[in-house]
Amino acid sequence: MQILIVKKNDAGQRLDKFLTKAVHGLPASLMYKYIRTKKIKVNRKRCEQKYILQEGDEIQLFIRDEFFDSPEKDDGALARITPKLDIVYEDDNIILCNKRPGVLVHEDDSAKDNTLIMHIKAYLYQKGEYDPADEQSFAPALCNRIDRNTGGIVIAAKTAEALRVMNEKIKNDEIRKFYLCAVHGKMPKRSDTLTGYLKKNSATNLVTVSDREKDGYKNIITKYKVISENRDSSLVEVELVTGRTHQIRAHMAHIGHSLLGDGKYGVNRDDRADGYKYQALYSYRLIFDFKTDDALSYLKGKQVALKPSDIWFIKDFAGAEDKIERIISAKK
Image (cartoon, rainbow, N blue to C red; front, side, top):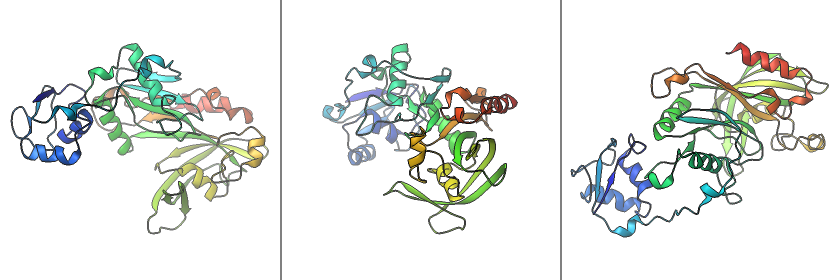
């Protein structure tokens, strides 16, 4: 028998969710069987798989030791990595970073250690705020993600409670998200609220926008206002009311104003020659529009914004930095 003591970062989650992360070698089918047959108990009593764990709970596991062998061994990466982060806000619960275009948020086949989340983990590990050896089921995690070739603010949670609360806030649309983008041509109005419907093709990782409701399409709402213009393009601030995949890129292209540098929803050959290696899109400010009281209530009404000079395509629009500074200041 082995006993697991529920720690602060383990509490507040279902028993089965905790066991999936804490006992890596235990197949899900056996886990549910062992809970049902009382080979896994909580506080020496039979317990349901959906039981919400409390700090200090004792989980008794009458199972073979081999299930506790974890294939995820620490290879020293957290000590070896030199964290490269542009931190725009940090407190005891969360950290907000400016992710540069070209940086992956999570690992894939081409990158493991050189990702935003690995650099955040290494930063917290080297500060003494996180040690995987002390955790049974939690690791610092991202609450939102941004495409590889898009830049902007990414939120990471330092604690399990912060992760749960922030994910709930995002789900309930309690964080207002503002982007800057450079688009081809002059917008038809100085400001507008665009509505439509979007469908994602997972096989091609492309989305399609329609003006009419269709089967399989989800509604989208995109607010914009023009900040500045030059001869043949416009700098636009966009507020995402809904947050669908590629929403800004596809919605702007749908109305005939694709983003500069976007080869997926526009033609970017000439843009690349002008230095637009990535699509001109940046998540540059957030407002925590929280409605309820909880562990992150102290953030209610707070705005976090990047400096206009941090956004690589601003330089192509004369006077834009001052205009953006005024927008940021007006919201404080």
